[in-house]
Picture 1 (cartoon, helix red, strand yellow):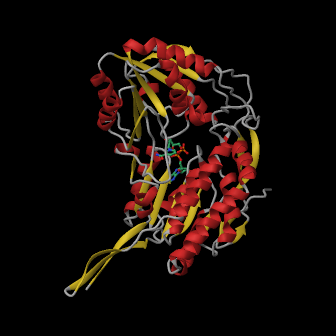
Picture 2: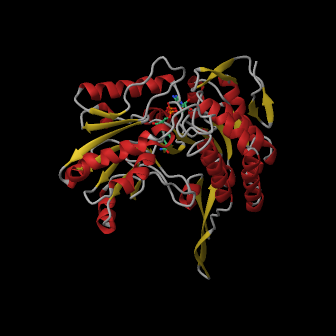
Picture 3: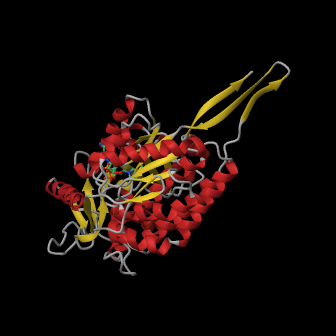
Amino acid sequence: MSDYRLLIGGERIATREHFPVLNPASGEPAGMAPAATEEHVDRAVAAARAAFASWRATSDETRRAACQGLADRIAAHAEELARLLTLEQGKPLNGLGSRFELKGAEAWARYTAGLEIPVETVQNDAKGRVEIHRRAVGVVASITPWNWPLMIAVWHVVPAIRTGNTVVIKPSPLTPLSTLRMTEIMADRLPPGVLNVVSGRDEIAPRLTAHPDVAKVVFTGSTETGLKVMSAGAGTLKRLTLELGGNDAGIVLPDVDPVAAAARLFWGAFINNGQTCAALKRLYVADAVYDRICEALVRYASNVVVGDGLDEVSQLGPVQNRTQFDKVAGMVEEARAAGARMILGGNPDRKRAGYFYPVTLIAEARAGMRVVDEEQFGPVLPIIRYREVDDAMQQANGLKYGLGGSVWSQDLQRAWELAARLECGTAWVNRHGDIRPDVPFGGVKCSGLGVEFGRQGLEEYTTIQVLHR
Ligand code: NAD
């Protein structure tokens, strides 16, 4: 029925039930994934729990070497994984697509492998000794979304393992195949039970997030589901890292050179077809430069090649799934009906197979339109005209989200000061969405709890123990 298996306690486990995973470029099955039951979830948690006792006791050197090994395995299988990722996720092989994602996964794994959390000595003298240690928390449940499945899996799994925890990962049912394959490839670098994988429908997730033997949940997905994860963990006071939805605003000041800024603005918004948590999702543009920014974006976007991700020339692929396609199409229609102007795209070819939605630029968008107020998560950018920058700032900060934001200007000092006023976890100047393994990343307000990456991100997989005499 399927070549894919769960991974529990070092063993590849076949399931009775399977479910189809669709290729978004055709709408046809790309493969069958094993459908884990709640019993499989329990077995995976038990295997992780059993492995924790010895894994936490391994030396720092052992765990660093193991994580370097994971990076090596990803690198050795990068092309195979990139193709599988494109097949189920839809993103192109090239550009900011699957090969880019695999390079990122390797880079994050390698950098995180080398990170350390030294013991802090607060006092060490004749009167006493006080040390702050960081201890692994136990079994970590990782739940990942469908937009950057492999990179996000690495963001969860490697820091957890590096710090001595064991993991049960549950990938999105829309893109489980590449995670099943990647973890299978990784498994021989780890003792049995340190990394376990259960793929299945959404319904099995609450079993994991409420499981009494899970000490921490790291979740990347929508705010709506993140809130459910939070309440599921409340009964046993689980540690949480939540990376949730965003509706990032960019503010363009009147002195911006539209042609020079067009490429960065475009890819800030359209990376992975806009299906990126920290993509630019609302662009506020000063009246004085509004028309020229719109023109420059249309010119740039018109040359971007949209097609099957497996075609080497494609720069953008289809939207990942039918639900997302319908949501985006609905929001665009509502904006049109409310008086917004489609300056590019906005009319999908519904006879075409797969979930292809054209690159869409919406002029004269404004607050009150869902495409502005909500996270659209598709290849669509609403462009909002403003007269006073304070007004743009107020609108940018006016929503429940607070993941990223950006300010665009030739006056770097002014842009820096304005960026500091954005209510978000990362505020960029003249760029949007740049993330790095050595810099913490996370959301404020309803965009998340805690951070990933860097020393601060690693610490989230630990709790403090003080030794005091
Ligand atoms: P989603 O919330 O629908 O699903 C995410 C995961 O949660 C899937 O694995 C799903 O099976 C699982 N899930 C479903 N019901 C659950 C439940 N009751 N309890 C626990 N888990 C459950 O999100 P999605 O549509 O896959 O991903 C898109 C969203 O993810 C967007 O909102 C995007 O902004 C967000 N995202 C955020 C970041 C970030 O770093 N902040 C990164 C990537 C994506």
